[in-house]
Image (tube, rainbow, N blue to C red; front, side, top):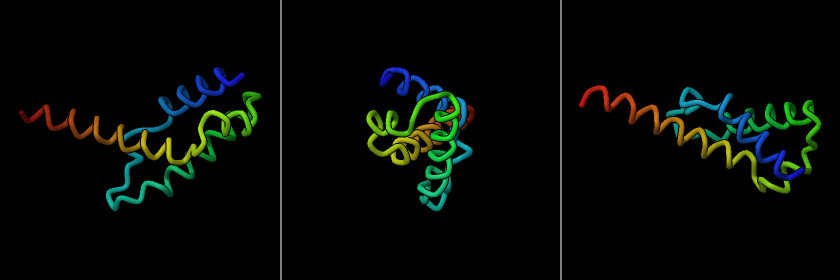
Length: 84
């Protein structure tokens, strides 16, 4: 079941997290918390308990905050490449 939880979270994040979630003030934690809660709810609806996600992702909010930063950095690089 753990593999299923990993796949679910990674898929959910790829579909629901983007560079647009980045907050310029550097406080991506509040957005990450909201997305984390949404992810957990979606997992529950898919039959994956929160405890299963917690076994794999010790801090889902921190994981999602990192994904927000990565998405933002990819978007910045993509835009910068247009002007090079």
